[in-house]
Amino acid sequence: MHFVHLGIHTEFSITESIVRIPDLVKAAEKEQMPALALTDLSNLHAAVKFYGKCLSKGIKPILGSEIRLNDAEHRMTLLAMTNTGWRNLTELVSEGFISGQQLDIPCVQKQWILNQPEDMIALLGMHSDVGKMLMSSNPQKAEPLLEEWVEKFGNRVYLALTRTNRSDEDNFILEAVKLAKKYNIGVVAHNDVHFMTREDYEAHEARVCIADGYVLGDNRRPKTYSPEQYFKSAEEMTALFSDIPSAI
Image (cartoon, rainbow, N blue to C red; front, side, top):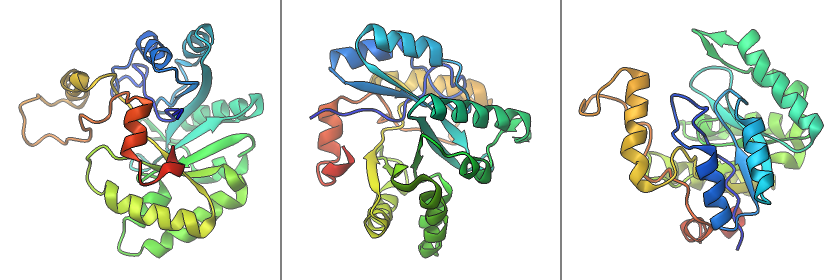
């Protein structure tokens, strides 16, 4: 079974990832993956390099970005489907820097996205507005938030499911699958890739520590990532979501 990673951060997500594009494309070619999605945080800087490398290996490049939604605590992913979608994506990411800065962090308002949703796919994970509300004491309040997305995006809205041994993932998946069924929308397996192999985890943590001003040995530092956020093979992802095969 083919699998496509729809959440990959590269070294152009400077404080969050150590994935180099040549290594990424080489691994995808080895795994015979038909496509890859680039979703760097709040930027599109790697797009041209990524696009060219993918095409040179016969891999379909999917251009996207993980954006900070409304504020620094919420995130979601937008993927471009066509040139129109790409233009909308570039305008939204740019607007985050021009008009959405919050303490020097670019944020994109939900209404801006809803105003120009054409030819883009929306992936809503546990850190999106819908996801955060699903994990609250009133998960039913996620429904009107999802309805806003569905009204503008239609069947181009998906709930992104991760299993990387981080807190609350299982609870989110339980609620997200029920919500997806109720609204007849899709779910996608999403590994939130930030490094290429499991062995790269410590090097990635060093990068994060430098960015956040911590040392590796500090037990008080926030640990946002897990060793499972590597570039898993199609077989690994299929096995991981064997109970939810539609997510593959």
